[in-house]
Length: 155
Image (cartoon, rainbow, N blue to C red; front, side, top):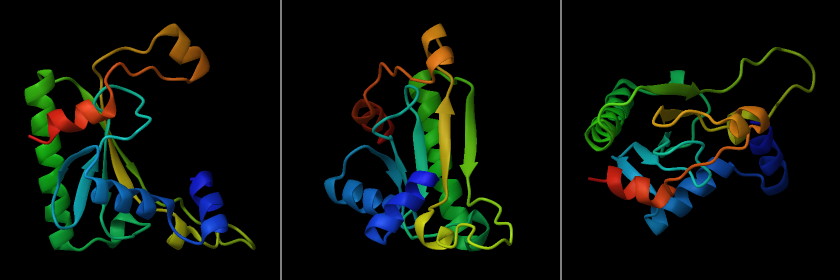
């Protein structure tokens, strides 16, 4: 979150929107999508087949999406999870909502969050265990390139 704030201070635009526009234009590392949402395999994924689902429109808060957008989000998430199940044989996974932080009313506290933060879901299949190196250093080794993961998930 801090990096998004720093990038916004430098470029005056959302880094997440920049990355989404670039990946959609390049058609790189896209696993699924519809009019409102896209599932991407992140460049520096922490585990094989990690997927992030982003709204294609800028929004800092999950709670602001409409009922139609909820249905479109459910469709993309269902597609991703079904494909993961088919490709990987039904591994356990975690789904994390990365939403805007709770903003406490205090002077000078993160005034740009609505402009610089972009909520998203992270899908983390548990296909390998963490090694001692990863547990100790928090540097992650991923043996599956995100481009291959996205190709497998794109159907």
